[in-house]
Length: 251
Image (cartoon, rainbow, N blue to C red):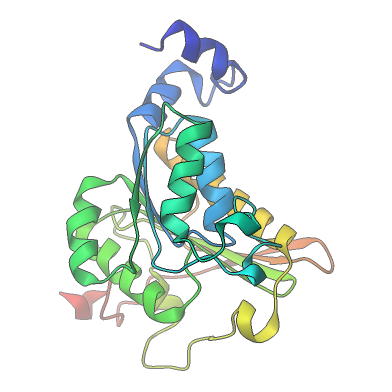
């Protein structure tokens, strides 16, 4: 049962029929891994901790730099040269003491994925490079762990849900096969605006909350955001049987 304090704190969420007390309990019991604590990981971790997710694992081996501050909203100039995961964990723990937060102050590799993924209910990919994205996608398929992917550059963003528990779910590799030229643009090459990251991070957090509370979430749908026109576009995907990560060739 929710405590009296929890009933008061989360009353605006529990009054929603699609959340309710049971949904809030599910959030309290949930364990979520956030990979990357930069422009996307900052708002994602704030929203999930604020929503009442019980345990967050924050993974990032990068240090905070001056150029991060316009978009990585948890950090200040006093945090420069500190590890992102450690710093975010400290700040979140102070703001949300009921949330159990563990910092992983190094870049995820295959060994770390195999250690942490069996412990969590959901992974959010907030990374900023293709190599990490492929690794997380492969690991989530291997461990049948749902994955919410977010990415943003310039005025544009994208979000995709991969749910290996559903046999029909496509994966990131279906969309961008590693054998082909995958998009490698990032904020270091073409720039980024902070509010775009807030929009995509908010969408990732929303998808995570829906999944954790048992609400329907759309697989095989790539959501693209255009910050110039303020428009969303949705593109339907299909699981690729030739995909060697999630298709027949992976068996």
